[in-house]
Amino acid sequence: MNCTSFKLLLALPLFVFATTNSFSQNLQGDTDLHESMLESAVVSYYNAGSGDLSRLYNGPEYSFYDPAVKGNAYLFDNNSFTNGSIEYDGFSYKSVPMMYDVFKDYVVLLLPDKSAKISLLSERVQNFDWLNHHFVYINTDTLSKNKGVSTGFYDQVYKGKIELLVKRSKNIQKSSGTESSFTSKNDIYIKKDGIYSHVNSQASLLNILKDKKEELKLYINNNQIEFDSDKEQATIKVAAYYDQLTPLNTKNKESERIFVAN
Image (cartoon, rainbow, N blue to C red; front, side, top):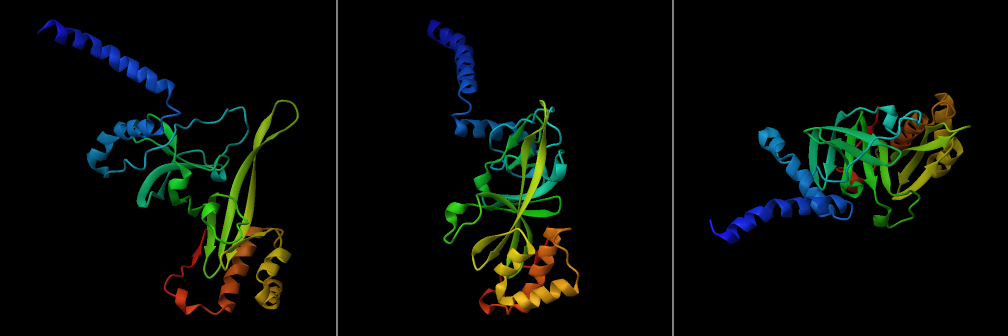
């Protein structure tokens, strides 16, 4: 071995160390390289027979919250990885261990080798199913009519001729002293004729569905539907009845899908 080759061999470990150290310092600003490393970390898992899921596992590393904050940030307080399905970048994946961080509005995955947790890039998530609920991603930049909603994930609790969506969110509320806790909030929206409207009461719901207002008032009274006790379920019942009263547009007959979340 000549002297030049020997020097190159000695320099190689130093180059690798320097490159790795530089990457660690600039991880946040180098998304492409981060995604490449995450994909490489699970290659053996895919080759073992699970199919090529490499495009799914890309996103920044995710960390849990300070345990001093009471409660948790997750959907229905479920803070364990539970199998769900997801459509990501136009590809569908089933039986994926996931969590839904409602506070940050992130879908969180655990790498198959359990070496790290990542949060998916939300704008690449078309929809996901978790805990018997179907969530869709709405990007307000793509809406042509009045927006009425903000960009993010929405629980699609009913879809027929009209659509019901619930924005489930959490905030951190500080109490007396140094204590703080997560608090939940659910906002209901109706999508009708391409327009999203917020439902905050029986009166607002009837105003949105005013073309059948009298029939709906009679239905609510006859069936003793109470909005104060469970506004979400009451809205679902009224929406389903509204669909029964409304003639089906034959142009949309083939594409209509009835869905009611548990």
